Image (cartoon, rainbow, N blue to C red):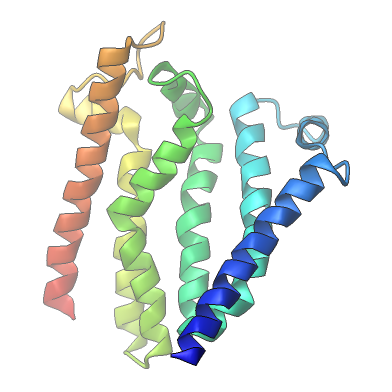
Length: 213
């Protein structure tokens, strides 16, 4: 019991320290995220949504550095930590590299928080299988089995990151071809559809992987 309490306190302390670092770097140490965006802009990154994604990647990277040793000690599963890193960074990289599509998603919700929603959808669809695949490496399963799990997980994560293709295939209005943003009702319907598709993708992959392992 004492060891469990120690692990819980260590995890909370690590999370708190990571959050404080992000806070202090932003508000007290003078690390201005807007200035950071300007530096990225000077390097050739022109689109506002891409600047938001890059600064988000840095903030999550800082958190990961604090969580890495504690979670590694608690879980005794270092490969799974790399799986978590892939799960978080993969959708961000895909969104960054698909500017035409992911500028259009602002027609669903005209707020940069929409990109966090897509990260969540991507995690729901395939994140579990990516992390599970990396975990298999830790438990001496055949390497090919781990590779298959990771591949299927990444495939699942990709599904909600293709709203333009999903709209063409299903004919469901996801705002990809609109000139103006959706109204609130249409916006809710689009997000509900993508969320439901993410859950269905997870269930299909769960059935497939269940027959493999």
